[in-house]
Amino acid sequence: MQRPQPQSFDRVLSSMCTEPHPAAREAAERYLATNPGDPATYEAVASLEDRAVELLATLADHPTPTDAAGYVASGGTEANVQAVRAARNRRDASDANVVVPESAHFSFHKAAELLDVELRTVPVDGDYRARTDAVAAAVDDATALVVGVAGSTEYGRVDPIPALTEIAHDAGAFMHVDAAWGGFLLPFSDHDWSFGDAPVDTLTIDPHKFGQAPVPAGGLLAREDAALDALAVDTPYLETRSQATLTGTRSGAGVAGAVAAMEALWPDGYREAAERATGNAAWLAEALAERGYDVVEPTLPLVAAALPEAEFDALREAGWKVSRTAAGELRVVCMPHVSREALRAFVADLDRIRA
Ligand code: PLP
Image (cartoon, protein in one colour):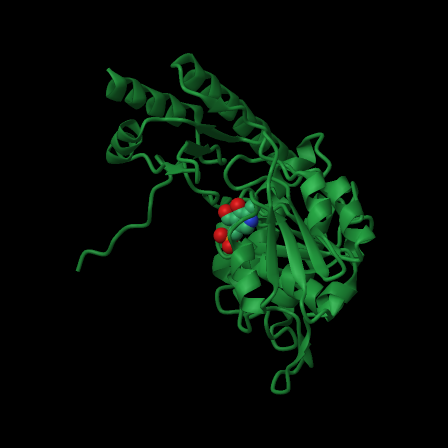
């Protein structure tokens, strides 16, 4: 039987994942049969995971990266679910709620349902960023967590993290930043998003997105151990006595791949990738605006533009993997694998379709 071949990245403009760095690919393969979920048995991958957390904490400007708590999760969804769970467990309110901007990733809806917490979704402003007045109005004594997004999935926007952190802490709640996608771009920007910019409690930052690590490699970081302690359960049959992760057996390949990618690329390789992607997004935004489309000005390298449905469908038929925002705009994520040549070919196809 002819097996389907993995997707080539040539025409993928919709994904927040990308081609892994060659060193990361190789490291992942070497650690395929290891399980960081059982660190006393798989000691080498467990120490690699400590290194992964230290590197991620360095990117996220933790004041003492060697002391940061965290682990390599299966992805941003797991990291966000766990952030909600840690906050709920620490707040100890029977009717806990979580306040998120409407731009938050749908993983928070999964978290709320799984953990039986109320999700309070508040509106964003005209630039798709969380409205601090709306967040302040939504928090109360039972708020366990306030979420800010640093690199939103649809428009790449960065919420006002320091102001949201203040609102959260004034209400006795914890503050979580979802930098699943933005975390490997934001260190090279002026945005306030990190542990260094505000006393945020937990943060999602995924190596398998802009970090160029193989899937699965998400990242959950915590400013202090207490957040992870709130997740720990006893593990009677393992050599270690407790486990804070959501899944049991986990991918050692994900951990090793993440470390190899970060050691190869932090900081210069990531800076170059961020600059190239930013240039590509600006180029595409201008090309679309010149053709008369309404373009949402990119902040991070993600371009959204209003395209008629027939043109969107024709681009998909031409083999372009493009997606749409909830409002129906075309959405192009300028990941490291997206070259200027590919974008030129994309715009040439669009011109042909419009002709
Ligand atoms: N958070 C943000 C901001 C995202 O953009 C995504 C996915 O695109 C996620 C979380 C979920 O990540 P994953 O698909 O790795 O679970």
